[in-house]
Length: 155
Image (tube, rainbow, N blue to C red; front, top):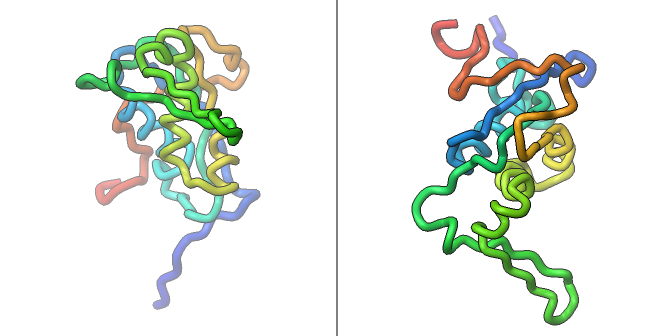
């Protein structure tokens, strides 16, 4: 008997919506879980060259925590591509003014850095507080470390 590797087809991909609550969660761990869902690695139909992932809504981005002294020492750096265009902001200021950006950058940094990763990143929605405008999609609450049925050795 010949064993074949399953490859998902573009038309057969089903997408769900999940809500991740950032209250009290460590930024990197929250971002890793969100990237895993966006990429589709939590599904048995994961295919590396296709976007098989689900939509992710992250709420309470303002309550995400950074461990150690990262809040005082870590810098968000960007450059305008003009001479002298380097801008640096401490994460303490970034988390106070734009926590959505800090969470989005952490998640996007864990996705592939190509057009497939950009397509996955469009399915990420980040909100500062509890409220989000995606109730019509009937999002499900995600519990961290969750696995779907049929995944793993014991089914």
